[in-house]
Image (cartoon, rainbow, N blue to C red; front, side, top):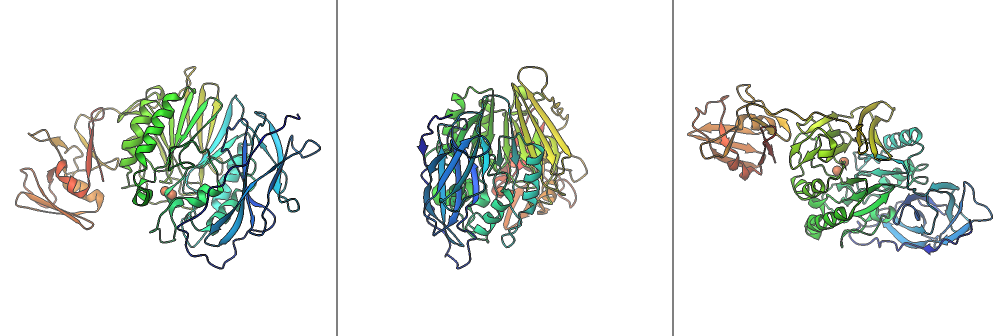
Length: 534
Ligand SMILES: [Fe+2]
Ligand SMILES: [Fe+2]
């Protein structure tokens, strides 16, 4: 095949601003390339982006590539763009090249280097039009700024790759590393990913930890190290290019979003509105058999008391309006799958709604406060080892299989658009008496009665303050027709409805009065559940 591949070297994102003072420590880079990473910044069928680093004295980089599993007489050469890569450990040279004009569904051999020092020869394979499989990994971070421990990430990734050799690419769901601006974490992350990320492309999602500038997690900024080392398609909204993007493989369109409103908005302003407009337009234009979205923070979470209401309110109505089939999230380190959702109603058949899948953890960090929620059809807390998802697309059937690193199957979920092979998860029945939930968990009332929520004479909802306080770890003092709730530094005096406000007895308070504590309420009429979130 002599067709000349045209050359398009990607302009490297300038890595500037807000980096902490450069320490004298070694960066770990050498003359021989390392951190060799495949991503798709262009069309997965016809391009391949390759990024690597060398020590700062290496100023030029080349990719040699050829169809097949080894380089030979037909080998082509492409020059890479080189740029200084600044981190807290020093300055390296970072090289990026995008090979273009490639043949679809074709194996290529390649190596990178400066003409004298070369990486080992590896292979990549361009995307095709037919059936394919990809891998999804929840948070791979170490869990400690001081300890860049990425052996569990290595173990999960290797196990997933070894068990799914046909996987065409993989996705990290954000929080790849513990501190985005600490290169020691990236060095350990890339070392763990070697042997996979140089063979199948990574299509990363950004997490909140990618914005962390220091180990104290108090200073946040653009995820420059994530952006620089893992180049992605530049087709997102202005100001968020690389962090928000779309791509297509086979009959699936993928949409990657940035949920880090809390971390980025203080410095860069609102980031959600521009994404909403972009997403609505991109989804409206999609004609693919399947639509899949990825973003880090969870609209349907599994932490005990952590919600992401602004992200949910912005993204979910658009995702559900266009019937995105599956949304993958990270951040909570648990593994969970909702019933198909549309507009806060839950369905049994995936044809009726969008399924939200929280992807567990692939790395060292796990939480001890994960709980199942009323919106989940499946929940698993991966305490003992990392987990991963393999997503298989065969014609009009998409199957998600969740496994432990050791291969144990935890969940299988199928969406079949051509036949009757979809997984049906009977939606929960409606309660006769209203239940109150906090962060998706049903409250148990003071008198062990879970059904205390009710509408007052004015039509406003009332709930049992004692049960809510018990869940939140707040204290309640009652008397004189009012209840006082102390939640952290917040104290609110709330009129309680005409009940004897004795200790241990229900204190029914209007949920509207809880707004001063940052608590909001949603009523789910299909379930007869009053859901409180803070
Ligand atoms: Fe995380
Ligand atoms: Fe996170």
